[in-house]
Amino acid sequence: MDKNKIAIESLTSDLKRIALLRHRGSIQAANKFSAEAQKRVSEIDAQTTKPYIQKILKDIPRATTNSDTALMYSTLLQNYTLRHYSSSSS
Image (cartoon, rainbow, N blue to C red; front, top):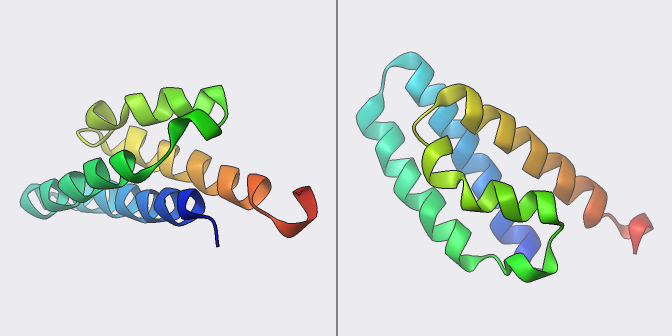
């Protein structure tokens, strides 16, 4: 399995958790997952991704402070992995 796919999917999960926790008011827990999200970004080889994904990756620090942005990026990244890494798109 592709290392980028795993890292992006993990980032997707972290962003979704951040969005839900911030929405519920659990800021301390959301901050923990924000740190995890930053680690995931460093694991991704951005040069092998589409330009719009590169923009999202650069904007992750801001996204982790806003639940709506985190949720939107989570969905966009999830759709990217489903489309880009599916067996039929190779």
